[in-house]
Image (cartoon, rainbow, N blue to C red):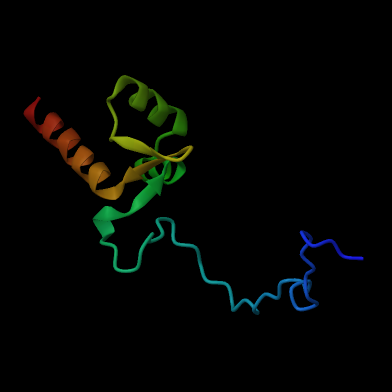
Length: 101
């Protein structure tokens, strides 16, 4: 005998979720767009992608961040991200610093 405070699910609700067929795989962009139409300079990049781009180990980026010497990064939840525009500006500053020496 069903209780009054107990909800009984219909057969439709008990069906497993059905997923649509997935199309052909596309190559993964190293710096994917977060939002359609997002400008190139507004993209967010991972620590590993930045390390690959600069040709330095991730540990070097960690040291630069600790000493506040590298490009500015920020946390998205638990994950560290860099804005492409900040990285490009930081590289320009490094080039200016080399030229003025």
